[in-house]
Amino acid sequence: MDRRNFIKSNVFTAMTVGGTSLLPDFLHGSTTKDGKKSYATYLRNSAVPKEELDIFINENSWAQFDPEVGYILGNYMPHDGLDNSSTLSTVMEDGARTNMTYANKPCRINTYGDSFTHCHQVSDSETWQEYLAGHLGEPIRNFGMGGFGIYQAYRRLIRREKADKDSKYVILYLWGDDYVRSVFRCRYATYYQDWNDYGGYMFHGNFWANIEMDTKTGKLVEKENRISNKEDIYKMSDPEFMYENLKDDLMVQLHLLSLDKVNTDVDTKGLNKLADILNLPKIDFSSPEKMKSTATALKDNYSFAATKYILEKTRKFCKENGKELMLVHFDPSNVLIPMAKGEARYDQVMIDYIKAEGYRYFDMNEVHLEDFKKFNLTLEEYMDRYFIGHYKPAGNHFFAYAIKNQIVDWLDPKPITYLKDDGKLIRFEGYLPTSH
Image 1 (cartoon, rainbow, N blue to C red):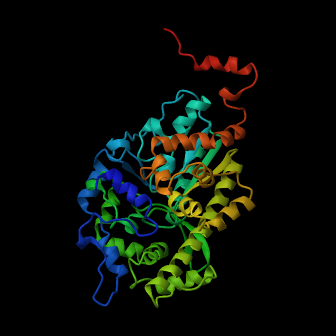
Image 2 (image 1 turned 90 degrees about the vertical axis):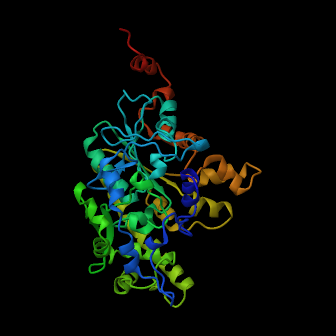
Image 3 (image 1 turned 60 degrees about the horizontal axis):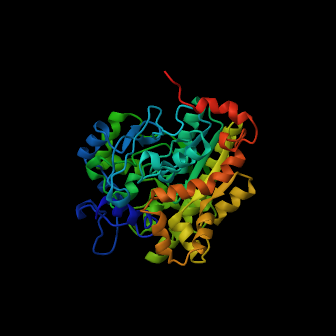
């Protein structure tokens, strides 16, 4: 399977069946004859080959090490684009994805989130930020990164917005399982069976700053990265390090239990305390089906509680620093597809919270749902119009013009292309090339 189709199959199955493994059997968590799947064994098998870490640290690769959020965008050409192409994925000195549209002008809009903010599987000039910047006549900076959770995007937002005196408008993108990713200490340990790092050139998901529940106090706490030194990344090649640092990571356990990847050697005491704190049933190990359903319920509610905490802190920071915040939500696999089938969205509690709390909010799921109704297509045919796993360039273009009106209404003063008085003629001077 080529990389483009591999990503396509995994983006839309990551939360259900966990994707298709491309790794040899000896790296998988072991299942004994009595059906036991050991969490301890699974963690020890998650140790990263040293050769992959060598590439991640020393070569041009898709991601580069970051002491706070684990990694940010690097410089690479993944072979995962439209029509079997490679994509140009490059980074600027300040960590933003390379932008070229009106890049010489001051930027007042910064965007944060995961791969649908970063716009994975397209080249630098095919992101929704670049399409929208071309329409508005001003730059939009892209600080998204594939694999991030909401908390990691929040930490990057805080760091950047403290230093950026030009920006006033901040977009935080909530996608897919970002709720859950926020709480992992190390996301790599959750997907190493199902992801191909291509020898290290696509390695990511290493330890990062995260948020988790302190089961002694019943309060959410923010944690710093357990590997904040670049050279210490090699600790991830040690099976015992992986075990010792993740044996009590409740979200990693819940994620794996919900997929029936492990079923023994878990921190039952910690999981029971978490269930009590959240007033939810404890995990039922009496059958695989009951284990998965009770673990999923606890996982989702844990992640929703963490997300509410993060959003409150983000809004507080923006208010204190003269920034305005917009939330964007899109989840093609776990929200849009069920909605298109007439089913309820699993994260309705979060949408209700966002609306009740008065956040400025844009829901791309609703846009796609209404767009789908206009076509005489199967759902699969509709998805193929816009997606190759992540958005195709056409998908990013569609998103840019879907969110356009909300962005224009939000900005003050309006973008030059929307000014209604003679002021635009004065400002236009800055757009003209200078002669020498």
